[in-house]
Image (cartoon, rainbow, N blue to C red):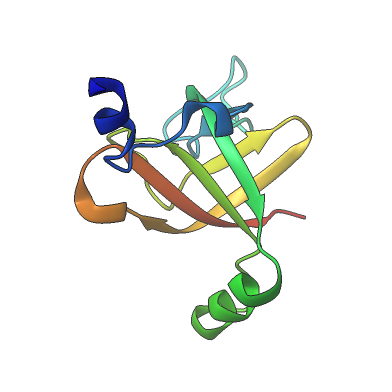
Length: 118
């Protein structure tokens, strides 16, 4: 009985977070390689389990009102320090973070509204 009350609170469903992604930050200008050249690689901030949802139909039309480039919603557990300068990498795909949504401001989930990098 207690279990059903806990599920009903609107928590994230862990089973939907079935993709392992990396969150990368841009290199600092003062970071250089062994030869003194600026780094091209983006350092990894963390790995996280995520749900990746391509936007379609009405979701995409609604997102187009804000910007026509939002193509994907990536849901992860709340993590402090994630910002719009970072990218999300899943296998060979890279996603640029355009907006970050904090549902209900409860520090349980982040929704990253992204577009695929070309």
